[in-house]
Length: 340
Ligand code: 13P
Ligand code: SF4
Image 1 (cartoon, rainbow, N blue to C red):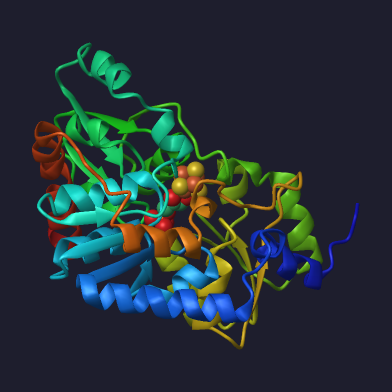
Image 2 (cartoon, protein in one colour; image 1 turned 90 degrees about the vertical axis):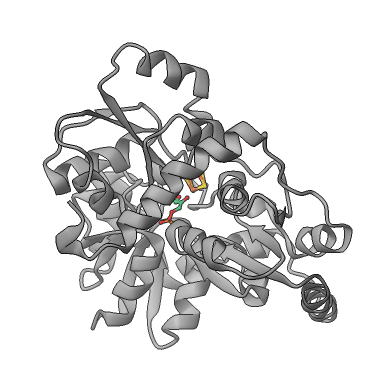
């Protein structure tokens, strides 16, 4: 077994930024300043997911998980929303703000979960049973949202499933790992779509056991998109935002992080006194989401300067997809005792 050195692991957390040639400090500074100037001119808000590269996180108005980002998008009074994440996240912001301009640095930043669930295939399954109640993880297309009864994120999936009608047959799309975890938490039976996050399934039982052996005192916090074999080894399973909260509160000074490595930057900002160990995978893909990493500071700057690319969706989809997202936001805001 190869022992992995902590410095090397820390570096892996930054690997994408290292291999992607960091911007020279003067350029980084100039781009960041220009972005903030254009933002003021456009009356824009910059929303960024926890997996975005550090230089994007550093200019964003809000950095968070899918739930926090949708809540921010629903509440913003800004005229323009600049969304640094993946396509389905920007779509959600557009659905909640159909009249606003929603910009995104790279239109091709997709998601393997979204790809795994084409709307026509979902419709064909729904047609086989009129009693199905479809709960869609937010990592899906607007067309799939438009076919769903309610949306959930990893941050509220347990609450949303607990609130689902008792007399319906629950169908959970598209993440089978998140779905299986929610079944364990709620005891509700669900039919699970066979989709997964290509990045999170890279963590294996063996790769986690190895790192735990090396850092026996360090708790492991893992995302529910990980496989059951990995979740079983975790001290906490939660969304990326709840990971930040867990790390803030934990008395541990070293914590193993079982999710995409972009979050290490956010964690270091929030808890500078702690050491975060990015959980390794079995090969050297180094826990990166290639889609999240398509966004760069230059592309963010250009999309704001050119007001392009922007998110456009057909009227009918915008209207229909809004209902299950609003249902999610409403259930999410309920106190726990009234959620069922
Ligand atoms: P969170 O909502 O927990 O940030 O997860 C989003 C995601 O895409 C995880 O891969
Ligand atoms: Fe999709 Fe996985 Fe990337 Fe999250 S990490 S955006 S689930 S491919």
